[in-house]
Length: 318
Ligand code: STX
Image (tube, rainbow, N blue to C red; front, side, top):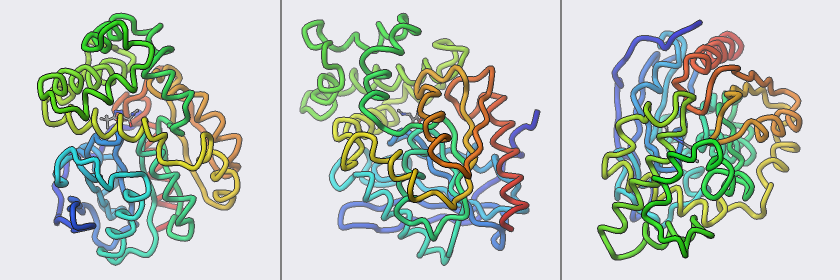
């Protein structure tokens, strides 16, 4: 099994003003003359992490990471104004132009796969290909599965902690109940809701389950941006024209675009059915189902398949 490449530092980084309100953090590592790739983080609102650099051979790739609006080092922190799928797509274009890149590989998991697909179907000519993990098409069925009922059956212990800040009378519509608290004036209610929301995802992300929850999900600043931005995007149904829009677009727009899809069999956050549907709709994509993995990009079987994919794309497009 292939492991992550050794840790590397960013060679350069900066902030790009993308509107009167927002500035976004970007960074570059690896080979300045290499094959450009953009790592697209999850959430939305999760921020990039140094581990994302380690999926790429730094002698082959020019690795670009950004923190999407309102999260990571981008400012203002946790801001929801002017924060939609389409402003994030236009920020990717702003960074691409700022760095003088003509075409790049897209690499993203979970919400990162949603945003990569949204970019690819609208800027197809800028994309060599996509490497995606934990496919999330942001449909009403997927949101209902994870935030209302479905995942609750597999993780009843974590689910009890998730719904704890919401009174019984409001539990029939959890997304709305969380949205009210995450965007309300009561600081304490907002903090409790953010932590419960973020920990639910943190506890269900690997097949190890609740005990292996990554540390950052309980940090106040991380949880606030993660929960607020996710909930804002989901209440707004991803800012897509209609339910199922992304899959429909992929079917027509990605006909000639190569793709790799890596998905854990036991992914409870974003069940395999979306990857399966995407794979059927997109002939040039290849799906690898990882037998003993959940959602996290750091599950050993997922790391192995993702690195095989970046190696192959490196040979193909360099
Ligand atoms: N959200 C799934 C997602 O994009 C529904 C996601 N889950 N965890 C993450 O992203 C991070 C590990 C990036 C925080």
